[in-house]
Amino acid sequence: MNGTGPGVNLNGIDVAALNDFVEDVRDNDEKGIAAFKVKTEWKGQTRTVSTVSAYELNGATFNRHFEIPADEPPELLGSNTAANPQELLMAALNACMSVGYAANAAAMGIKLDSLEIETEGTLDLRGFLGLDPAIKPGYEVVHYTVRIKSNAPREKVEELHQLIMKTSPNFSNFATSIRMVPNLVAERA
Image 1: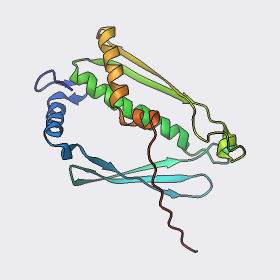
Image 2: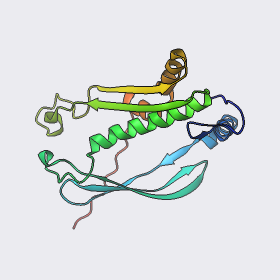
Image 3: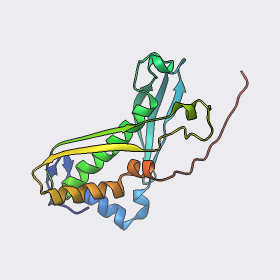
């Protein structure tokens, strides 16, 4: 990222603070290490509540508290009280990319008038239900459309778009494999 000058606030982003953060991480790799954790509790039927209580950055813990409910629609045996896990997954992708667009656009001197990301995918529930082991329970393909309104030239917006596809953590999470390390703790009732 490069800046547009001190004191500039573009797209709601403090460009000087962004540049300072980038320089800190560039100068000290450890300052760029962030760790996140979410605890999810089943609340009956298909309902869950996930709780975010803290994250770590540069070895320091920062406390916060957010609850994220999830449920399934009635057709999938839920009570339709919240977005389902697939919708939350896509929302997380869109939100992560939105942060990237806003911050990187600011660093590039691009003012965003509007930004919208629409994501969609189709699941074959036979994989989820264990009816056919040859069918993947997750997505084979996810399509997304980014709509940006800006006075920047098309080439600059395309450069921004390419940058987000290279640097967005959740785009990377969707586009490449993640090594999952399971740990089961089974207790008798």
